[in-house]
Amino acid sequence: MDKAEFDKFAEQYRVMHAANIAISGETPDFFAEYKVRDVARLVRQRGMPCRPSRILDFGAGIGTSVPYFRKYFPEANLTCVDVSTKSLELGESRFHGDAEFVAFDGKVLPFDPDTFDIVFAACVFHHIGDDEHVSLLREMMRVLSRGGQAVIFEHNPLNPLTVHAVNTCSFDENAQLISAVALKRKFESAGFDGACYRYRIFFPHFLRMLRPLEQVMTWLPLGAQYYVHAIK
Image (cartoon, rainbow, N blue to C red; front, side, top):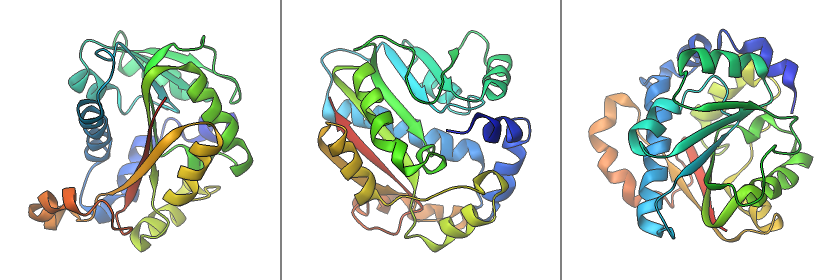
């Protein structure tokens, strides 16, 4: 993981992201909230030994997901981790008191085993070299408590609009998109059992009235994004 690459775009990230996804008709907040809402739904559906009390946002950047974790998991302690200290400083200034912002070296998460009930990552892994994926997933599993849930969202390389957005985005200049099938296999290589994936976001804003149909379309590999989910 390249700290300098992320630091370079930290201050302009929100503006650049909004411009890049304008074709969808949605804002960055829409994409941030649906992911955390999906995590809350998965927790309800799949069950946990107890109510989640500690959540790790891996690759949290400037903290875009923080207000939505506060909305859907108001009682949980939230930790945001990233290699970009500049992004973390911006996140701390925006959401002081709502989360703990922690830097890490891109290899070893600075937490004890079994620390978190949920480990979450939002479109981070396409910024990480392919040869680092499994080792980082093992780290995520190490810090996840028994019965805890890992949820990783990524861009779908089978969706042409997604590919166009990534290819024309400055902070995605070194991105390497990964398929849902490939990421699921990496989960399995890292030691997760029962990993599954679902596709998300099929309709742009002007067709939003059709979005209730998406709940029966998650098998269709045309969604703009997808998640891989597993329980430790």
